[in-house]
Image (spheres, rainbow, N blue to C red):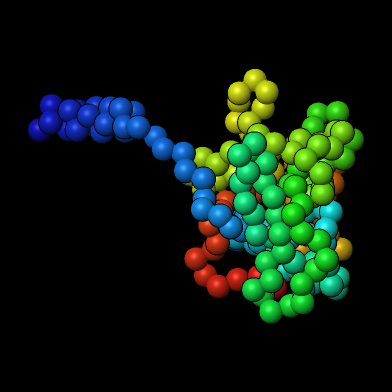
Length: 187
């Protein structure tokens, strides 16, 4: 019996290691949802520039809306307002998702109407399964997402690379292209 258990224990990892791992990007369009301590699948939204997570309706801005993304061939993410929530459509569209690069003094993730932005990275986003990662120039994959509470209840700013950020209440999050299993108000 002991020999059989050893073979099973040894064989299982070998089967997992030997199996091909598939990286699949979500089908377009898709939303992004933040998961972390106390943040159970809150949608990413914007008012047209900064990225936030939570309920867009809480910020009291007619430009605030959840974002529907498409992954471009250059590995950039282009976002448009999700107008299926019943609210009037914001004026922004076709915005490029971006993260601050190492030369930036800010940490908030944002959106721009350009595919290039001085101290921000707009390409090299990849999915591992349904998890959004960023691919560095050295080929390493990074997930440096974190959230900081905003002035609005239930709304956080979405940030990148907490090094040097002294903000209180930081929560490490992962971004996934899978909505939460329970119904969360995404307005």
